[in-house]
Length: 215
Image (cartoon, one colour):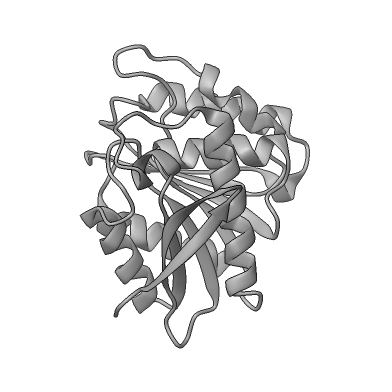
C-alpha cells in the first residue's frame, strides 16, 4: 500500500509527511521518528504497513532538522511546534478517525512533552515505541517527570535490553505516574518485551493494534 505525500506547515517553514490510510481505517496513529533516522526508516515503514493491514491509518512526519538534512535534533520548543502542527494536520486530514500520537524514542518524548505543556488537538492517547527514559549508561527517571502532567491514556512499549530505558527504572517511572494520577481513565499501560530489543517491529504493530482497538 502506497502512502500519500503531504506537507505540514510549521510557522514560516514546512515539513514532509506520509499518510497511509487503508479503506477500512478505524483510527489514526500520528507517528514521530527517532533522533537518528527519519520517517522513511524501515522500522517506521514496517510499522505503518503492518498497522494498515489491521485497519489503522498512520501519519508519519519529519522534524525540521531532519527535513533540512541536519543530524542535530531540534531544540524542544521547536520540536514541540512541529508535533502540534502535525497533530492539527492529522485532525484535519481524518476528522472521522480517533487520533492517537507518539512515535519512536526522541519523537515519542517530544510528543509527550508537547502534550504535557498543552493538550494536542483531538489526541485521545499517547503510544510510545521505546521511550528514552535516560541517556545510555546513565539510568534515571528525570525524563519521566513531565508525564505526570499528561491526562490522557499512555502506552509504553519497551524491550528489556533497551539501553535508553532500563526496565527497573521504566517500571519506577511508570509507578510514579500511576501514583500521581488519580484519574483511572488516564493511567498508563506498560508492555515489556522480554529478551527483545526495543524496536521489535512485529510486536510493536501488535501492541499498537491492541491499544487502539481497546480505546
